[in-house]
Image (cartoon, rainbow, N blue to C red; front, side, top):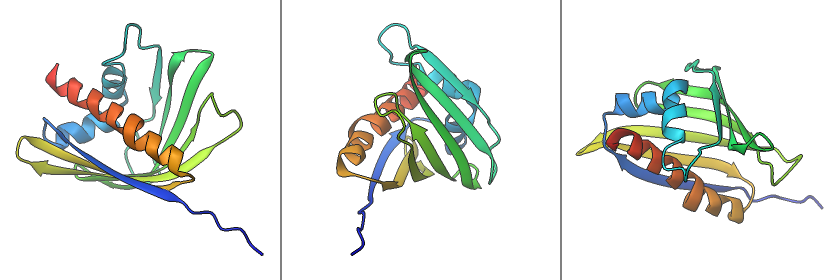
Length: 155
């Protein structure tokens, strides 16, 4: 008998007060990411390292962040679709310090749609292995990123 694993997905969207070009660039440019990623932190934003910026199919962006060098999250995004400034898709491989030895691979697609008041940023993430992790991304990770991107444009 074979075991089947149910994968989970999520969809979340937010209106960002900027043009699709501006939001796309803020999401993909390593120097801009370093700025917005540190926004809204309580005090010292800790370690934020972003490398890559090769925004093309097959291009890679690597992110490392955390409160200090002993507690770091790592994420490698390999772009699978790039349609600047309206669509971006990537295979995302990440690790977290609270789960040593565990690597999470998901697929992420982001649409940047022009809307009254700015850009509707729509995220669709698939391949999430369990409901608890999906809920974390849905209630904490993605809203936190969108809060910081919004702050980047409204500060």
